Length: 114
Length: 111
Image 1 (cartoon, rainbow over the protein chains, first blue to last red):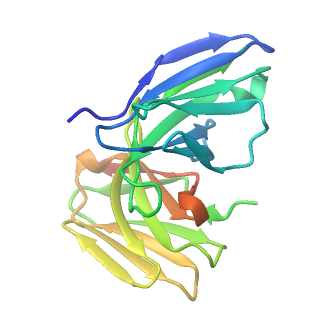
Image 2: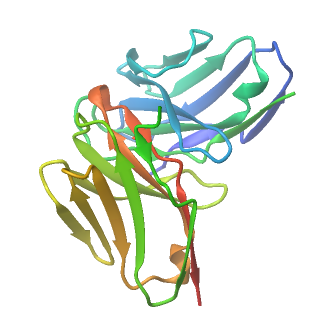
């Protein structure tokens, strides 16, 4: 059984640019959540996708957007990058969209904005 | 406004002794609490959880206690092992399956 994978591992961008991060869910999981983890903090919920529809969003501006594909893989897009967007971006999948006990996390993508 | 707080940034424990990690929360609507462990360069891995209707859940060396009146939960690891050295995150489930995380506690188990 393949776990959650994310690409790329590391990324360096400059302020104002756009970035796309990718996530492949664990087999059989149809729900994907994205989190931002700044240095020294816990992960913060960005949004969740269930069966290709956004299913909840945290306190992040609209320049953070996402997609989920029919195979349940997902993308996180960030436009007009700011320095504060530098963080570890984590993707997590789970087997159901309504009720579950835990989410399974990928290793993350480290984004640095210069 | 932090809804989930882990007030101890780090904890150092001798191998074989008990590790106690604490977590406080403010939102009474949280219905599920989880602990995750994170090693460097890896994503968080699920450790143990507890429903808000229970006060204790045990899984091997790991036990989570929930005190709803105090809005406090703790993770006990007995006995602690060097491989337990990691960052431990407390998380609470909000509506729509959103998880709210604390800032984490670094646990170091000395051999």
